[in-house]
Image (cartoon, rainbow, N blue to C red; front, side, top):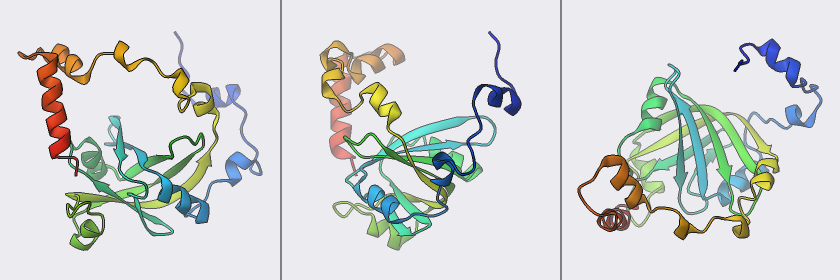
Length: 206
């Protein structure tokens, strides 16, 4: 199998967009009213990051709509809620601040893409502003926006992601407890593992 190894090879396959094309012109350098409204309604964002040495990661962040706070037209604050403490994204940001964000709104095929540089803060006032039920996040990822633009609906239309009639039967798939039992060779039943996971979800959501 041959692989493309240069920009020139790639552009022999894909046309270069004209500077006046919508795909180029739609990129903004800061958040406008539409971007701000989209983020305010979004309960879910994917964060792409890299340690700068070729090791990349994408992590989901989700909460009630508007959980990602817009500090100004060029700055977004994303709270880091309790998790597994792997800290893949946070450690990547410390090493390499470049991030890509993809904001989603359930039922909407279009998405909002934001690129920029991220830093991590434990600023008390900001953490308190982003608290839920009196529980502030341990830290906050603050992203300085360098590019923002709407992404077209084709991927969601092709995948029929929001059409529940296209979803697989959940009962036909293993539970996370079954998966972890097999992958980690746990000395307990899948049901026990699922109960342990459910307890963790209830006790440490925020």
